[in-house]
Figure 1: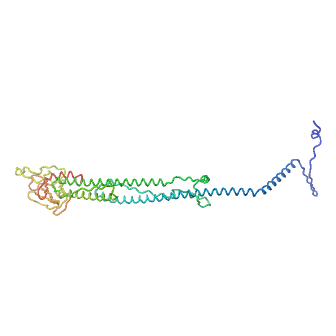
Figure 2: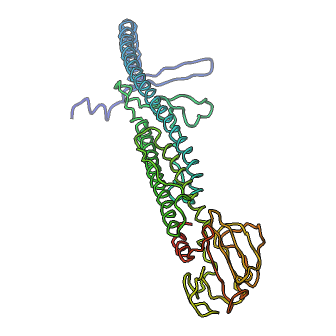
Figure 3: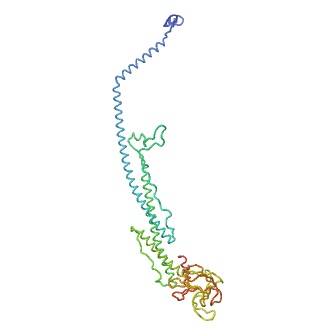
Length: 422
């Protein structure tokens, strides 16, 4: 071991530097250690380096500020160019929206006009069908145009904040993300105008379909009305009523291609219903109903053996076997011209139905109408009996055309055929 190391361990210790301050009777001293010197040197070095860096910054500051301002100006110009591009896109989209709005307004106008037309037709059809007592082909509800779509919902480049922040008023916020602005492109969703246009087209198509169906149904109803009137006319002809008492039926064909085709078809439907009503009115006046329903015929019209003289004689009507007091009903609309006793008829009622047609109800036990009274088909007018030239309770029913007795069976058969039309 060297002498120096032995001296450090076993010899005298190195003396420490001490700083002593004396003030009167007070004495203070500090021992200066090596680490304190190191710390002091380090602090002085840090301050020196900071001073040098500050001096360098002050020298180079103008260059740094100029570079920062140039970079900021470049970024500002870039953002202005992108904002101009976005405004151009917004203007194009707004123009397209205005055009779409104008198209939708035109379609809405046409839709409302068509709806108003269908509503008017519905009113006319309702009146005509009430006359015809047929309503099954009229649509229960006419389609109503959907509400006009709000143009503000078509495209929204700006939107209002849904909930204002506390202490801040509502503001307009960008509807696009910052990344879209940085790229200079806007990603707008497809405008709902196309969807609204599709809805309008569907509604208009539905209205057109309903219009065509109405037109076809009106034509079918017109044809059926004329056909029913013709059928009633042909059935009445079988009774022997002269053809000149009945109106002619039929109507022209109206093409659906003409602008006023539907109005013309409604006019012809009205004419057809009027013709049908006239035919029905005539049929109601003609005595085609049954005077005593569900009762059998005991003696028919024509030659038969007289019950009193037992030889052939002409029977001017039909006898119905009925119990005493059975209700008797008028077989058609008319006016009572006789109500009382008349020779072999006994108690008799005679009704004038117009056009030279009269009916007689004989051998009654009771008369329940008066002369001059107006009756309708199905009205009770008396009760069956056995008055006059009779061998028992029954009804003698007689029909006369221009005061000539005709076979009532033809009228009863016609009544059965006309029951579905009246």
